[in-house]
Length: 402
Image 1 (cartoon, rainbow, N blue to C red):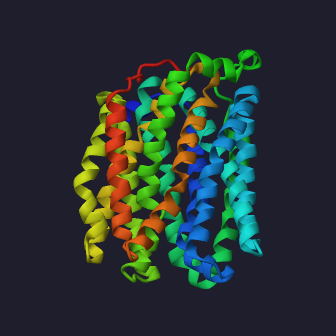
Image 2 (cartoon, one colour; image 1 turned 45 degrees about the horizontal axis):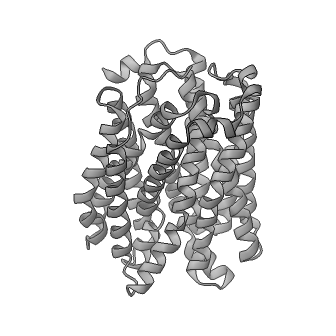
């Protein structure tokens, strides 16, 4: 019933906007997560240590704040729609270019540039969507939009399982060019955001905006740092954990990845929807608390069934909390910098948490290859931090966005 109420009265333009923003984040995540399945292959190809290749994940995450700021300012100045098309085209091209990297250095450079393009998509898509839908629909749409991230991970898992043995790791990245087709859809069906105003955009000054709202900005950056350790700490190295510590095959890793990404999608949708009635902060805190008893099953199970169940439940909690974030950050955002503020604070949190892949592989190495300890320690610390930070924050679900 809540879903039907949220959907009632939507115009074709609103539906197309939500679809385009969801697909933009889905395909962005798809290009990103291709790498986590082929770390071993790239390591072998270039003849380096795995931590050196894991640096590509760190660079991608570290460069995302730059992209969020650049593309966010462009979107605040020139409109959400044209800059979203530009951004989608760039990250598709750079995902495709990864397949042709001749050595580790060029591979790292391309993935860093991909991070710039990837960083721009979330903030623009979230602001375009939240400004276009009705207030009572924001919770559901927030969960849907954020579930694009695990949906992209799910697609990467399926592609890995279906075609990896045929096309290899370079062929996997060639598939990354397909998101460019989304540009055509946006151009044809998606209108400009009703919340964007050209005259106000010309008058806006990001330094003035940040000076007025510096406390909110610092709080949001710290919160998103904890959130990014929560998500990347439970996702990025997990396939490597299943391959290396448990010796699972490509098929087994793919099966578990599909299962836990379904859990992530379920969590994002349900928690986002419930946040409309129960509040953004309350649902975030519930997700963080529920993840704690799941950690042991997720990291220390010894069977495939146990690990799959633990991974499913963990991602329900992690992405459930995340499903509230697109709405929550846009509601906290200053209105004259809404394309810049949410994406930039989100990606600055990503920048601070970008060391996660190297951190977890290093912890595992120091613990004699014990990836379970590395995964569990980061997940617990992040969940506790999110609970505390959210508890001292403010609720803004009734903010006017359009």
